[in-house]
Length: 78
Image 1 (spheres, rainbow, N blue to C red):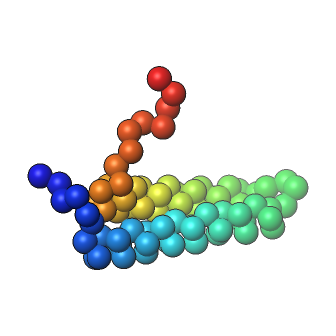
Image 2: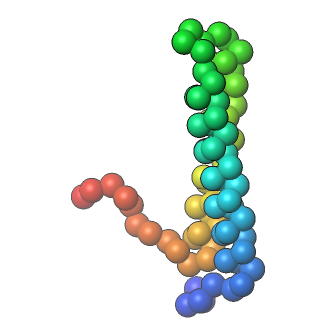
């Protein structure tokens, strides 16, 4: 059975996960602002690393939201 109200720890975990996702997204943005016109292989590798970090942080944020009772159904139109 799921508790109707998340614990304070669940909410704090969610806030921390959201902050980590925001930071990862900002790192992607900062990278894109300094991206040269013709990316080199090192740029592509860095971008892949940053995207992977952002996706992992997004997943952790979603898991924390689920634990805090913020499950939402599919965002896809039916």
